[in-house]
Image (cartoon, rainbow, N blue to C red; front, side, top):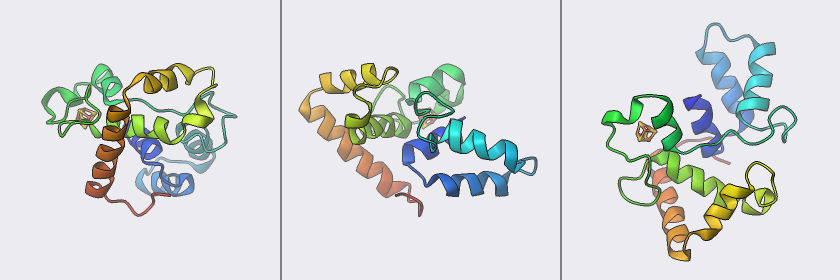
Length: 142
Ligand code: SF4
């Protein structure tokens, strides 16, 4: 869940995260892994298998695990220097794809929430996202 979420938020090329799972997990079988990764996890089929992109903030990870208990980052924060990278990238994802999802039945509310943020806050999130991308370099960003 966490790796797929990060790949989605990072906007890794779907075929590359698919190849990575196949390479990393000895029990990965392509006919099972491919639809789950491309369809469910990465929304790379445009919404045939999943009704929305599988995106979430660090708050979701905090709710579903104890990973965040001793982390230096704060799952509730998106733009500060303590911001959880998942939370920052979540809002960046919505900023980038706002037009596509503003009427979406399952994401429109989140887009509205984004729209209700101040201009300064949205700019600060975008700036923090740039910082995250600069400090977690990946070759697969599209
Ligand atoms: S707060 Fe830390 S452990 Fe929790 S999701 Fe963010 S980076 Fe991961």
